[in-house]
Image (cartoon, rainbow, N blue to C red):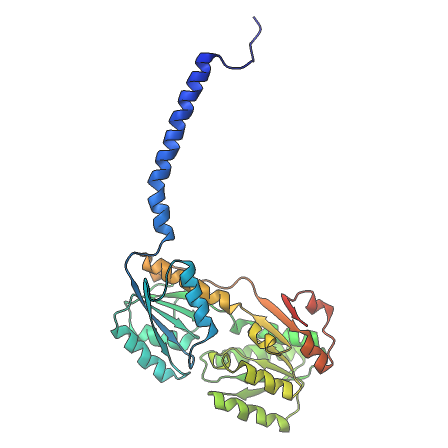
Length: 344
């Protein structure tokens, strides 16, 4: 007899309907069981949290707001379910140590350290129990942690990776203007990575046939003194080494570089937006928002020792064509095509 392939019989349809009803009930039951866990994963703890915020800078920065924005995106609102004790070290290591000890005495849930290895080291020395979330370049080399994947101890955070990009910045300067032969480098010798970064740059400079002239600034007032020496020196370009000291001095440094008609490259896009020729580096606004995710995980029970230290995966190249025109420089297409932002 031929096989019938039409619509199912009435009995078959009733059986299918009954099966579908059981399936719907099962799906609903699973959803009801899962929902509390999903809701819990998306909401901050009911208990109000207390944070310490230790910055190496002299005062509030737009990056502090980026961190708070990251907290808000995760459901933490300052003054409602989270309180933050702010401390600013004014670029002074001794003050950073004293402020770290002060924060530890407040019995906080988490301490956030920003502005490099100096405040993070101060916090590490002040406590071995309160979780610390940091922003620092080369955290292994700075002695903050022993490894990136499992930092151990009570510290974790993000590697801003800015210092490792100095060689790339020097290469970009040479690519932008192949005739560059002498580069002024402004550095903060108080930075723990100062000697290491200069050694890396000197090696690259030899390969690129470029001579470096290092200028030093330990405090904001040293910047004008360093540039005053340029009148007695010859040079055609400028490279700014990474340091928290230089962030709030952005406009001042860019104006001095412009005054001396130097081709400048900087570690943050804010410098290019202020009139610098080029910038290449990590997106610090995004990086500070990511610090908030570590705070969130720790407040929900995660241990810093088990939270891998993140490194940036994307970097921003910004070109200021208005400045290039003022300097009489035709920026090569090889650079313009790779730029994330072109300012005209």
